[in-house]
Image (tube, rainbow, N blue to C red; front, top):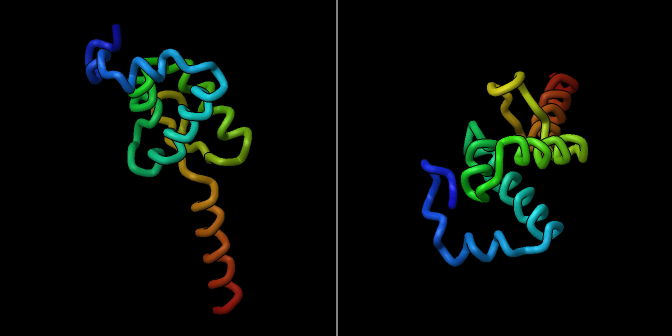
Length: 102
């Protein structure tokens, strides 16, 4: 049984995800986060709904991605948003280059 407001829980794809070993599933969750974080403000809710896991479990994945340098958090508590670290680094490098040139 999935979340009441989530997508159907009977799809074969979702059943397959539930039966995966822990490590490959963790990788799948983190890849999903990385692929969708820039397009969705509340990536924690989206991920929890997509994988039928709690927001707390999603938060653990987010924290591992932050600790690994893949994501940069902004804000606090439920208002916290995440950005890909690579995009932020490129943006800051471009600003630094522009400051040097000007």
